[in-house]
Length: 375
Image 1 (tube, rainbow, N blue to C red):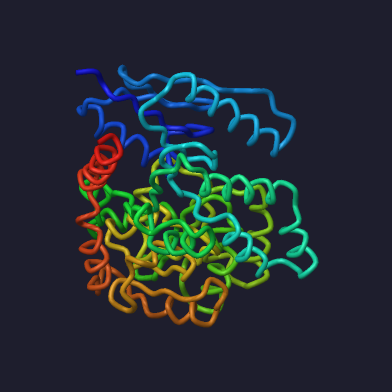
Image 2 (cartoon, rainbow, N blue to C red):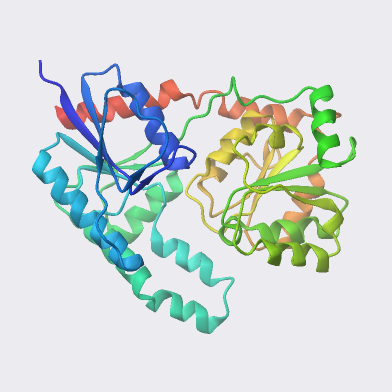
């Protein structure tokens, strides 16, 4: 019996990215199915499994639009020539069979971003040539006759796609990301004390971690302002070109001595284990993996309504959800999270909530979807 050929399209493949972890879990799960696995990418980083076929597609580029358009045209040309049985794209490229909407809906992100910009810059954002190109490519892809299925990682994104593009709800499959809850585990009090000592955070203080790069979108300014007038600590893991600006913000808000900037970290687990909660008031995020990681580590989560991860939060039971820019509500939530060592009911409820988001479940949902399309 000949193997069916699956192609996964991702412009830059780097192992630590959220979309890539989704892909690698899917690919590992599919390795024992009768599928030949292909990846179409501009650049591949990380280890390659023996039975994966990597197709490098790296046309010349002169700017952001030419980069997107060039890769889209080259990738489509390649997959048409190869005649794969299923093409699953993680980029907005018309003509794929399956699109994984890991970045959500571009217009919705721009609308949220407008909220933190001066009015004139907000107007410019919608007129920007690059953003107009992305919105156009996205619409063309959703309207393309070849599109058979859309994978979303949150109900929030599913609703946005139905509202903005009129895609039939039956075509859209919500498949949540998975978490390895045997690796992401709560620390015991001895471990936690040692981790806190390294970060110079008192043992009985309440500390939050903020994990994510791209501080503007992830809501670091709101996180700093939320803890400013409290006694809470903030551990910042991630990087941003404007990091100095956030140091200055913490200084002017009077909480610089309680904010720890830890930079990009290959291993985030110790930072979750040193904290009592995750604070991520993100402006727009389909479903960041960090929410699942933090919850598996027994951390209650404070996040925003425009984050798909809010679907896992039960208000006051395992965390809090409020508007990304509502500093007063964020501050109340920050004050409502207790020291985990003395009261971990919320943390345990958070861990319990993600226990069935297993890699096996994700794999079986994907395999079911592929089989349906192949049949």
